Image 1 (tube, rainbow, N blue to C red):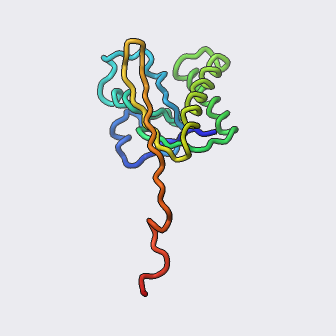
Image 2 (cartoon, rainbow, N blue to C red; image 1 turned 45 degrees about the horizontal axis):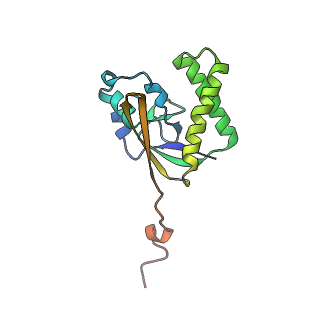
Length: 159
């Protein structure tokens, strides 16, 4: 099974999001945060989070890029528990029993998205408000093939 981890190529996430995810966090879409938003909510850094931010599952900050990676079953189960607790603490779910199925659904959706791609595939999300709520589209960028000899010199240059 695959899920995705946040990436940071530079410091831009720190500048464009109110709260940036740390590098190497497991991540999901996190579109549930925007379910009741209107055009009036889409200003400044909040607009950037809405438009293309993935939700890191440790900091609950946002990241622009994620990459698919293998996840172990025990890690996945721990993420379900963590997300369920977040739903109770931050979103007012009545208790863990009520939050657990929703957390499972969020992670299952993300796993199905990631399982379509090989490891290290970059994923980008784009969102927009539509009449029925939030519309998401996803773009995948396959990992580039490069052999070690393309990036490293072996031996000496004295011949």
